[in-house]
Amino acid sequence: MEFGMDDAAFIRGNVPMTKQEIRILTLVKAHIHPQDVVYDIGAGTGSLSVEAAGLAREGRVYALERNAEAVALIEANKKQFGLDNVEALHREAPDGLEELPAPDVVLIGGSGKHLNAILETVTEKLVPGGRVVLNCITLQTVMTAISFLRRHEDIYTYDAIQVQVSRLQRVGPYDMAKAMNPIYIITCVKGGTK
Image (tube, rainbow, N blue to C red; front, side, top):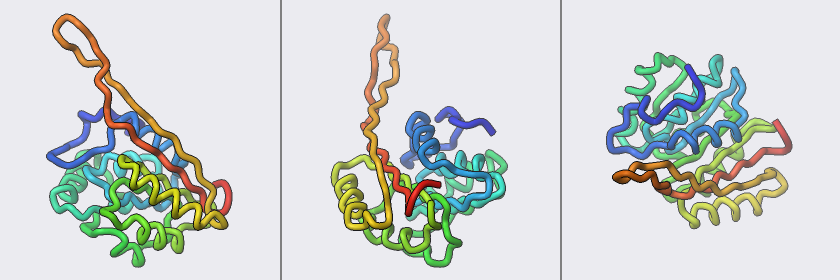
């Protein structure tokens, strides 16, 4: 399986999906190793879960999603790519996190207004040197994440980037850039570098 697959490779439905350019940056920031245990919280269609599973070939990816349609899409994408190391869980985090094995990497896309509780639970479980990568669309999510990280600066180091991707779109005889939503990618490392 190739890294950075085209968006068209995934079965979509009406569920949000992390687009290729953001998926690539998120996974680069995640530094996933072959044996890693990965949580993908708010997994949507599972595009990040699928690519994370390709990187954690000998590990396991737990894709948590509260939307039943999205869970079905994760299962469909898992089957399409022949992955046996992805487990789709129909749960709204932080519920269900306590029974999973300790993660090396946590990807957070959707948090359903439970970001503080999710981060509290993840902080307890994350292995030393583990990474949390958050994709934030709203400034409120960014502020919640940064506030949490500042309160826990004895545990985490973090950095953040803001990414604005534009794709060329043909409009009659012209090509113009069509902007996608800006995304903030916050990367946190627990107790040092992994």
